[in-house]
Image (cartoon, rainbow, N blue to C red; front, side):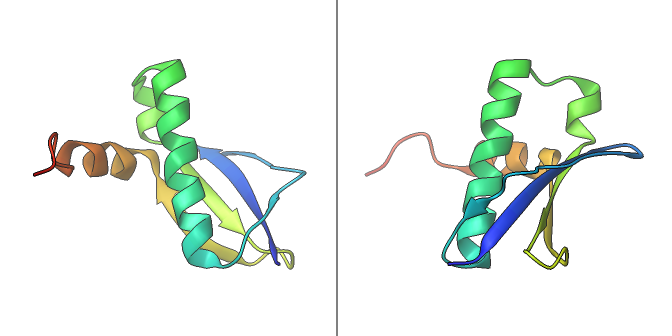
Length: 85
C-alpha cells in the first residue's frame, strides 16, 4: 500500500507530516483528510485561522495528491442530513 502524508498549510506556513499513513488509494486519503480536519475543528474550535487552512496530501514521492481546505469539511457537515429514513 502507498504512504500518504497529511501536511497542514496555514497561510504561508507548512507543517509537515513526517510519518504519513499507509492507505489503499487517493480516495481513501481524501476520506482520512476529511476526518482529520473534522477532528481538528472539533477539538480546536472554528477559529478564523483554521478555517483558512488546508491539508495538503502528498504521496511518497512528494507529489501533491490533493488539497483539502478546512472550510470544505464544514460545508460537507452542514449539507449532511441530520436523520436517515
